[in-house]
Length: 441
Image 1 (cartoon, one colour):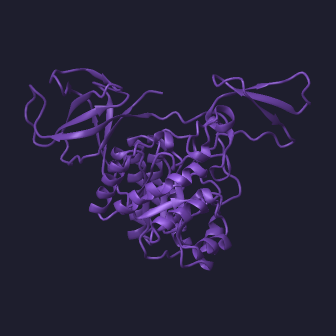
Image 2 (tube, rainbow, N blue to C red; image 1 turned 90 degrees about the vertical axis):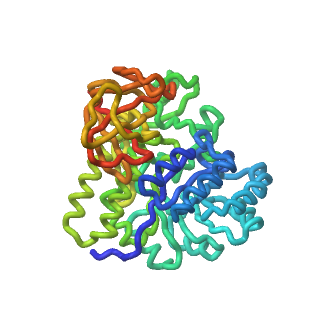
Image 3 (cartoon, helix red, strand yellow; image 1 turned 180 degrees about the vertical axis):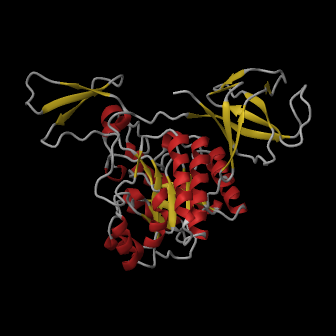
């Protein structure tokens, strides 16, 4: 099947300024991020106006875009404070506002009539008439709900060719419809619909049977999270448990592009810099392949290799294609996540020439300063992952403390410790690179 020639946009999440730099370095065309009180990731959102301005400058200096999420289900207090925030966003010159609430949209337009509006997936836009409705009201892009199938995407685009369509292609999935969940509010009075989800769907639950309960009626409670109980009624087909697998559509990018999707989106503002680097870099590689080699038979093989990287080098809950090709998504009923054989152990913060003290100069390579996450020790098999997704494989032979210069045999994260590693490859390691180590499971 031939796919349209227009290149696809890759939109990556950014929970803070360092993650923004990483996503851009690994090939994102645009970033989406939020401001406290208006974003659905309020607990991991470290952006103030100063940081937003810096992030916008980073994007625009590279010819890339920045989108701001205002996609909570707003209450009066949010609407009343919104004009102040909109004036700041207008002054910064962000490229789009992601929202789901008509009241928020009205308030945005009052302050900034020319603002480019993207409709959030939280708005549950799942049919072509809804797309036309929002298009007539000035929305330029629809972020379709994850429940929309490939067949439905094609029909939406054929009936609404004038509007841009965006679709999530990778990341965590909520068991509630388009994320409209009340469990967090029920357990801890922290609303997922205001960006403060504590993820009760990922907890471990135990089953209880009450004396007066019906035969098919049970109650479950979460270990370590209070006495609150949920009633579970077991029907003839069983009970629905909450832990969804993670979405991974890397093998469907060509089909999504052919169907009319113009922007691929990655979930994960709360994820680590390592996640940002790996997922953004791999999807950048995949998009480049389908943009440049759409008729090449080798593309499928290369995409499969990239999928293996996502499957084996990241912690995840098992992968699913969600609702794209069928009506029901997969769940992980056995484990909270996979047993990954690789662990994020550091981020490269500085590059250097030369070798460690007492070592002889070699023809190629140099030294890198690594801020330690988790742990790293002499003898570890590591991979240095650098933009857009290239890898140096090596064994840690020597390592030094960056502050004292003394040789060390291991270092642990959590204290901001920086170590110096030596590498002997001709490849040039770039800023924002990350380091992972092989672990024994």
